[in-house]
Image (cartoon, rainbow, N blue to C red; front, side, top):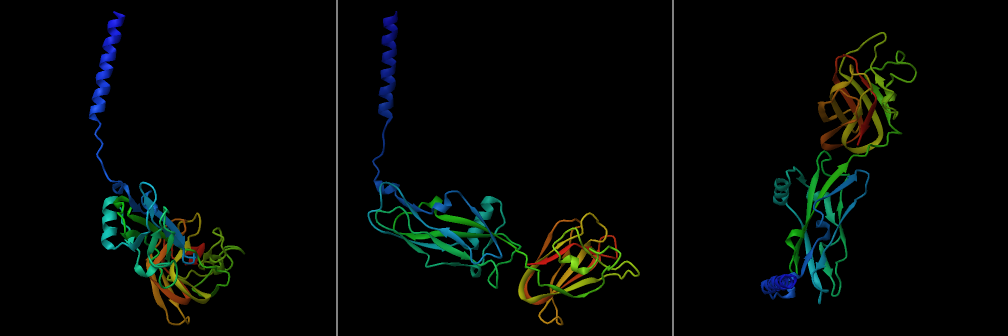
Length: 317
């Protein structure tokens, strides 16, 4: 019985291996079918880049590599391009996102958008796209942008799945240095009732969120609108403002506010109108367009549950 079982098992194994061998039928394909160029930055999907307004023309690195058997037998010439609105719309639809195309004025190629993968090499020299985070070419800081960088053309086939590097660009405001700021005008302040280290307008610029400016309540209680006017000491391009309400006290926090800018402390340009939340967090407001000015006026038209108002900190960026 044992001999019969061994023979039977051997026969079955032979049939299996023979069947497997007969099923193997690899096509005869030229090696060129496996050769392509691609953007290595695209391998991990979209990449987020966080810059600040204090960065000086930060860069996004891009380039191309050779993939396939062996090494290139001749130079491979490649050109690059950036995407358009249609590319961004397609990306948003596929990813359920709402990014905006980075404006053309807000970036530039550091050099010509071309590259060469040299004979015997596997990659082109990397290049950079420079991003404008401040100044007149900076984009609207309230938005998050998409910059698609793609291989436009190549002397060999392009890997379509890795043709485009999707760059998500977020520019984070950096607050201006306030050490030289002075208060030139104010509607009122509480000079005595809040103690020696509170109440006066200067405490809205001291960097301490536990101190605050409070409008007058001792002897008189002037109603809204309340305002502070500040001289920054030099003309700046201002994209927005930030306020830190008084900590731990809801009644009297700013609600409806306006921000004005002026070059001469006489003629004013309205930069922002809007409402703030009734909490103690730092709240940023973005201007529709950046405004030039040396003087800034914060006007508080209404406060939460009070005709008086208080404020811990005020910033610009």
